[in-house]
Image (cartoon, rainbow, N blue to C red; front, side, top):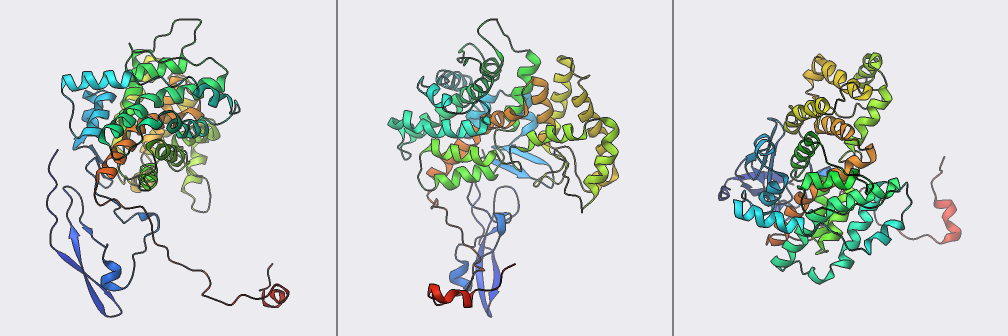
Amino acid sequence: MSAMRHFASAEIGIGHNGNPAKLPVLQPTIGPPMADIRKLYREAGCYAYDPALGQTGICRSAITYVDGESGVLLYRGYPIADLVERCSYVEICWLLLNGELPTAAQLERFTHDITHHTMVNEQLHAIYRGFRRDAHPMAVMCGVVGALAAFYHDGLDIFDPLHRMIASHRLIAKMPTIAAMAYKYSLGQPFVYPRNDLSYAENLLNMLFSVPCEAYRAPAAAARALEALLIIQADHEQNASTSAMRLVGSTRANPYACTAAAIAALWGPLHGGANEGVLETLAEIGTVDRIPEILRRAKDNSDPFRLMGFGHRVYKSYDPRAKVLRQRCYEILDALGQRDDPLLALAMELERVTLADDYFIERKLYPNVDFYSGIIFRALGLPPAMFTPVFAVARTVGWVAHWNEMIADPETRIFRPRQLYTGPVERALVAIDERAAHQPLVG
């Protein structure tokens, strides 16, 4: 990993009431510079206003780099396509946590540690039984992951590097088990225990799809496709769920509470729930002959219809993760003999039409990672409600990597954003029997 360059001493001027302010400009190793506005109020007498923090850096990070204009995604400097092609998900976990790819000895030890942390306390079974069978698996995961602090309270000193490492390993190892148990519970099937002889992806598939009454072996193509999904979803810079992890972590909450908050954020339909929305959109389209009508609606600004799975808030070119998954998507459809699935056939035709449509090309509304991941999840046999839980499994390592980085950062402070207040100015309290005369007319 390249060492971070020193910050430049260049300055920018900001005027406020005729008073100029000089603010330093910080130079990252890659990407555009950032104005350091920490002294903005002191220098200029004003704060910055940036809804959703789309233009504001909230931390220094050496984990992931995204260039939306050029379609670049790097984990610790490595291109995502190279990592998917040549590494396992467990290698990626080590990379994100430690900054470098592991040696053979490091990988062997790390794999052992993760594999032997996959079981969960038997008392957690009682927590699952407290949920309705038809509860969304993400709701179940929020509750179960938050409860882990009650089972592992002996290692919650967040300022102890060993405790942080153990908590990180536990979360990465146990999240597949927790997600699979949520799925099995929804089906009324017995929980399947993890197996130490399987890879991370194979183990997840086994816990999702095996039953005690017969032998199960995950198809190799399914394991390869899931491995690719796990890698490309492992981290994505300061997204909503990662920011939630950092925000809650800034209060010095335990890592399990922070991860539960991140899962809740990921659940949103504009974040991790988008891949679930892709299948819902395809179901709404129904048949290939309705594609022209749906595209007309998608192009109509007055129509609230939204074509899920196309375009991305960050990427203004082809999503590099989608490029990687596209080939895996076709591989698994062929290997599992699912090219004739009507819904998947509809998705492939929708992809073909949009990639040739000038409206989508000009606006760079390419199929995104949610489009292909949704199709792969469908091909694997998972219902839409389980798409985001598997995303949470993949993203857990990114969350804990950012949490570890934040705890060790001396600049970390409790998050406390400012607001642009637009309510009433200070006013006198009116006695209750006089308020009717002072109330504005409503309706």
